[in-house]
Image (cartoon, rainbow, N blue to C red):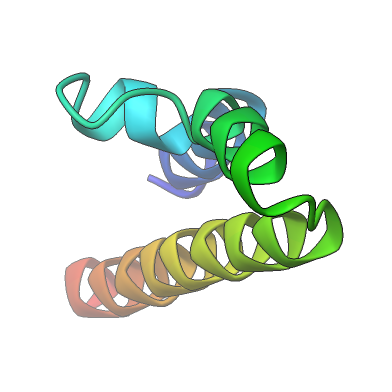
Amino acid sequence: MPSLGNELVMIIKETSLAYSVNSAIGELMSAKVTITSVTGDSLSPYIIIAIIYFIVTFSLSRLIMYLEKRLAN
C-alpha cells in the first residue's frame, strides 16, 4: 500500500491538476496564461496554482497515511 500511495501522489504532482481532475475547466497553466494576458500579473496565478497543488497532494498524503494505519490493524 505505501508504494501505491506514493505513486499516486507523484502522478498528481507530475501532471496538470485540472487536466487530470476535470478537463472541462482546462489546464491550470493555460488558465494562468490567460489571466496573465488579461491582468498583466504573472506572480499571483503561480501562487494560486501552487496552493492548489499543495492542498491536493497534502490531503491525498494524509488520506493514504490514514488508510495505511487502518489496514495495518
